[in-house]
Length: 309
Image (cartoon, rainbow, N blue to C red):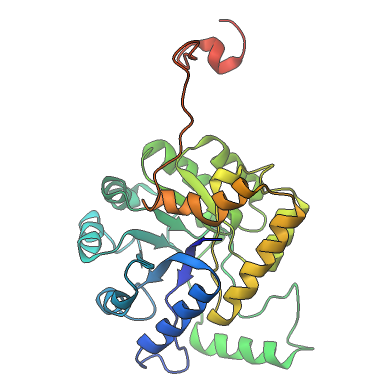
């Protein structure tokens, strides 16, 4: 089983942010390989961690396995900067925590450049996670949760971000304006957004969703029949978005999940590998052949409605 991981963050030592990032990156990618990952998008640079230039140097020993993806702030990233990142070696972009909705016209130059350069964009969708998952625990009964919350408050503080600006419907706007721009919405659209995300990927050929987000999203995907029912398997890409020590468990949970919901071998291979590999040019797209006789004319009204005009 080959796995394409579309969502792995460049690891960061939060306790020693100035430490050499290479050993931690090497360890993380070694654990990814051990879990069966054959290609991985490493989200690098931007607001946290090493600079774009240093991140690329760290990724050089992993060429052919790690795909550099630049984390960008669209308020500060022009179309020209996207072209510079591509020339440096970045092959995709990641956006999160934006100050305007994703479909703001102010960001269109960035999207134009990404479309022109065939750089897929991974969009965080939904609420951004925090230090404590209050669905599962609470500082009043969990000392570790209390410590995480305290560290978070001392490091982060107020921030100008909103899930309303990162809603799946913004990708519908972008898909209509940039029909060749490859877009991936993270976390199945985010909890609370599944129906919206499913409706966008149902009709927009250039929009996909990743399956990262943890056990709650995985449970929802199974209980609500999102995989292969509400959302076609060709529109789903696997992503880890977790710490190095959690990657293997993350893979194992999806192996069991795909078994429980009865995916075929072909459907599993699409999600594990081919969808992401096609998006990043590692595999040629699979397109059904059309018979030379009786070919449908999709410009005819009856082909669109199922009824004669």
